[in-house]
Image (cartoon, rainbow, N blue to C red):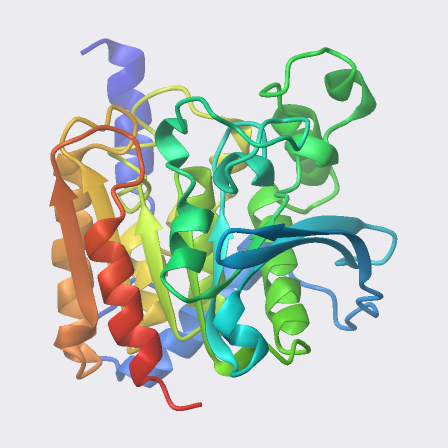
Length: 344
């Protein structure tokens, strides 16, 4: 290992992680302290929620469900489109809901079985596996937000490039950092606004809302659930790891970085804020970005935290043969169990 890498490893390894879980602190006290410190590192959230002002952009009938394209206000002056997939039975009886958060790619259309132009896709679904469609077929109402920096929410220069997968993460993340904010914080808060919106829909059991995300969407899913206790459970796919073994081990998109976060805690402790609510990890044994060694370390730490919270059975995992991708089956079954057992 070269001298510069050794120096950087020593620097990050020696960060104090002063809010990490310790057995001599009550779980409730620890959770409250770390949640506050984490929110501050993210840049904080608005003290006042803007009115959602939802607008229906399109409504399409699909086999077994209806797909709506809706736009809501998240921050003052910032609008976010999302897909809402509504199973047929939810029109008669409210159903549990899952927020499905895409990773890097061409946005919310990619997880809803659509091409970048909104037409029905017939080609390979890629790493996302159309998991929003899989979830609605499981009977969930599914909200698939357009994450900031992707799809319709890119800078004009990137939309004009003709490359649907070209994102605006770097320039947007840079601007936010210069203003004392973070891309992670913006995406987390916008996901909280999706919860606000879902709770206005008659098709949704408002106390039965879960979240699932892949890769960068796993960051959003895990950390939104960590900070918003209205979310009953979370599936984190292709992300749960340690910062040391993942984003600090190679070049990653700037949207992954939260200034000073290692002064407070490593990633597993941040995800541990979800406890005692359910958390399920998906990890491919050949994932080159968030690999199995770091994922196993994260799971071991999370098991310790969940045991301290008195709910060891609420943490689960699917370590599957595969790469950086959605696996699905075990996670979907786990979500059914979690959300069908949650009090309405």
